[in-house]
Image (cartoon, rainbow, N blue to C red; front, side):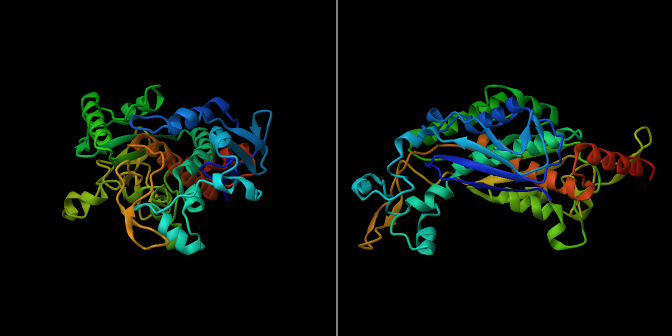
Length: 391
């Protein structure tokens, strides 16, 4: 079973991703992994931290001579900003430097600050925010890059784009998968919108938020093409792939809602205009759908169409114009603390969305086809593909 975990704090020495379960023999493109990390850092509206960090992945285990060897893979992403935080985030206790510990108080609305302080019995939020921070997603993206490389070896491609930012949105039928792929491969990420005119309007929204010392959210869409029919299951609630994907994307910091296909619009429509009619392509020996409102999933199982997942991102919680909060000691109303932050993170959130989708899909593919080596997994995959074509 493929599983991953991350460790590390936002201003600690670095972040670690531990990925276990990839078969032996997968070739690792290290430039690709580092480019994925770069994509996560890009986009219009990012804050000062992105000018400090240049994320690169250092592989500590599980890869030899460019290929996976079947053992757990450990990846380290160093924090360059650690030089400025050595005393504030020191592992050992040095009483003489406690004045440099950079406590953060009062708690900031919209963050994990207050709930975390009450949970862990802290009187200031530094140790809560350090782990709750979206900086943690750098480790996820490093692990997810390997999941993408694994899926790519089976012809599966994943890409994301911004479908709404503030009040500006892209028409549902506007973005082809080819256009979204072109966005993924370009160097200038900007706001990851397929329509240049709409992207310019989105940029103006970010500029307005910057001027007002505010933040702005929106919606990103992750599209996956090339999946086989039959990943996931309808047999148990926790095996349904739609539920697993929703949980994974919802786990991204600031995501407050997840949609698969046109699920939100479907809820207000009649059934006759929602369900995707079935056809058959004799030339390709495969079943087809005239539409894809289900987003590639039926009954928690992939149906061979593009898998479409959207994440709805709230505006970033750290405001340069702080909201009201309460002082921990006096319980008096005060302004919330401020710490360096972004204005808009939608393109980066889309990259993290790709990561979470890739990790779930790679796990599901391995659960179905198994294999301790890539050769074994490919053999099982091919046998199943032949079976489906003979149906």
